[in-house]
Image 1 (cartoon, one colour):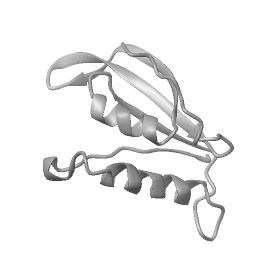
Image 2 (cartoon, helix red, strand yellow):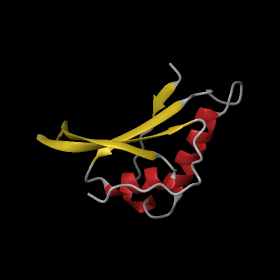
Image 3 (spheres, helix red, strand yellow):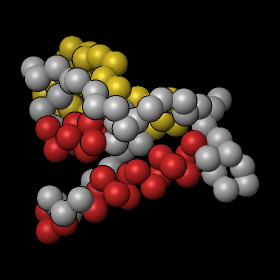
Length: 103
C-alpha cells in the first residue's frame, strides 16, 4: 500500500557510534527511492515504547515527525506501556529539525 514500518536494534557494543542512524538513513533512502533502485514508498513509520529514549533519538535524527502517543497501548514483559509514533513521508524535508515532546 506504499507504506512500511522501520524498527531497529543494536548490540550494546555498537551503541553511541552513529552506526544505527547511518544504517536506518540508508534504509529510508532505499524505501523512498523509486524502482528499480528502491521501493518507491510514500510513508515509513516508527513505533516504540515511550521510555525507549535511544530509539526515539535515532528517529529524531532521521527527521521523522512525531505523530502521537498512544496510552497503555503495548504489552511488554507483562506490563502495559505508552507507545510513541513518528513517520516520514516521501516528500518531507527530513533535514529540518523536528520538535518532539519531552514527556
